[in-house]
Length: 54
Image 1 (cartoon, rainbow, N blue to C red):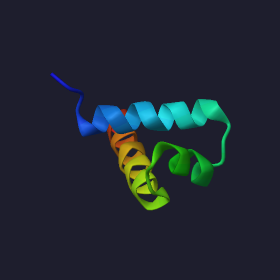
Image 2 (cartoon, helix red, strand yellow):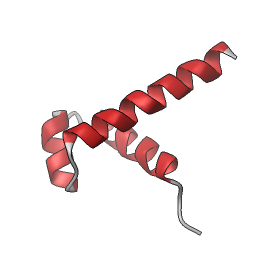
Image 3 (cartoon, one colour):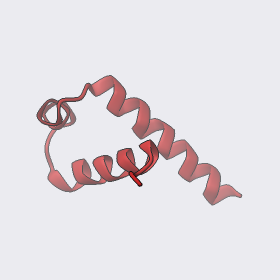
Image 4 (spheres, rainbow, N blue to C red):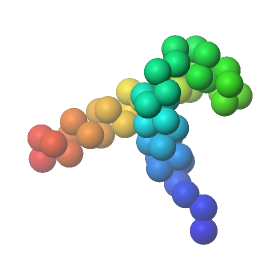
């Protein structure tokens, strides 16, 4: 069984944070777009904040 989209994006964002690369360069090197990356980064941040407040 594969990983979920959420798990995929959590891992990718974590990889980016550890890379020290600019977001635009990182996205391009992974074959993605900055807009999709930003969407998932915002979505996951909101989910994390909601869980902390629960």
